[in-house]
Amino acid sequence: MRVLRIIKERFAQEKPLQGLRMAACLHVTSETANLAITLKEGGADVVLCASNPLSTQDDVAAALVGEYGIPTFSIKGEDNNTYYQHLSAVLDHRPQYTMDDGADLVSMLHRDRSDLLSNVVGGTEETTTGVIRLNAMAADNALKYPIIAVNEAETKHFFDNRYGTGQSTLDGITRATNILWAGRRVVVGGYGWCGRGVASRARGMGAHVIVTEVNAVRALEAVMDGFTVMTGLEAAKVGEVFITVTGGLHTISGDHMAVMSDGAIIANSGHFNVEIDIPALEAMAVSHREVKPYVEEYTTTDGRRLYLLGEGRLINLAAAEGHPSAVMDMSFANQALSVEYLVKNHGNMDPGVYVVPVDTDQEVGRLKLASMGIAIDSLTANQQRYQESWEEGT
Ligand code: SAH
Image (cartoon, rainbow, N blue to C red; front, side, top):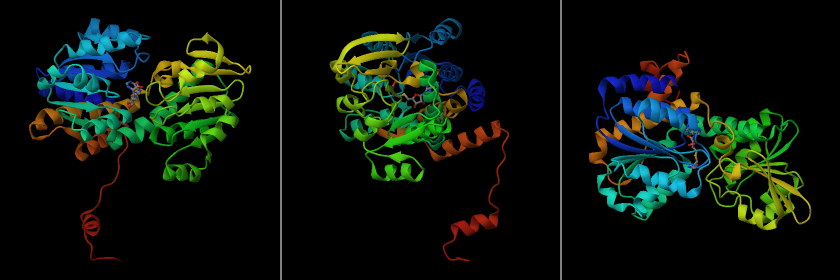
């Protein structure tokens, strides 16, 4: 994570976060550890909890506590109660800044711990669904402090959501099942940044990819990118592997599962465990067993076996290691620089959802290219003038 390392070295010198109490709710992975260490080097007093019950790397959590002195509240496979207790524990730290992935921490803070809100001056949000929730809070005038939507940086979603999710989702499904992708009919629910990545990587492995969408323009884009597009119900009849990445509720419903073939594999790489209607699956099953870690077999009344992966939670983080560090480097560089920006500017920012400053985005892109040893051109003064002029057409 070379970009983050450059930021860490500067933070260690300049201490821009000196003395700030921060609560971070992220997937507790080695990439997140690098971010937490960077914040600490910058002078912050950071505590960390997991943003998903299945995504913690326990050895990383232990090392953060034992070797780096960063209190970390997370255990891989924690139950729902423990998950929320851990969120509550980081709020007990009385944070001035929050760093969230999915907006669970911000939601708990506003709903159950609003007495702590007066301490909080700013926050950041990592992911698409978190940003959607925050926008809903802002529209209701419920959001009480400024939050920078790191996900909206181009150096975040162009790469993390697309190439990160694309690769790590296939990795998670492969590790859990060891299926052969070549020749398989793979249905990708949703053609946002994550869906585009999953669809293109599945195609790269030789799968026949079918995309389902509710947005006409995105559906059209999928068609012109060369994928087959059909309704969810039609896709359910022909698909063999189903991957949801919509960020929405019940992308795969009981109606879909009722017509899937024997042996269908169902996984989610989108938002929480609600994209698949798991209660509907349980209701139609006569028996249920764990075949191996992250693979549960449900046998239906008509004798079909459907395989649910990773309890319907993010398969890329549950059964694999999440996105590779090369892509998290840019996401977390945006996180670190956004916190620094908030420290300097929060006094002029009203409660609301903010985009990452364009300069920060460009800077992350420049540093990433430099770290890859790639040089690019810049416009000459003449070219610059031409671009800014509206008079010259030829
Ligand atoms: N909290 C929700 C929201 C989806 S998480 C949930 O758990 O279901 C999606 C986010 O995970 C992405 O924005 C991505 O930046 C992050 N992520 C992916 N791989 C990661 C890794 N290796 N370490 C830390 N975060 C990662």
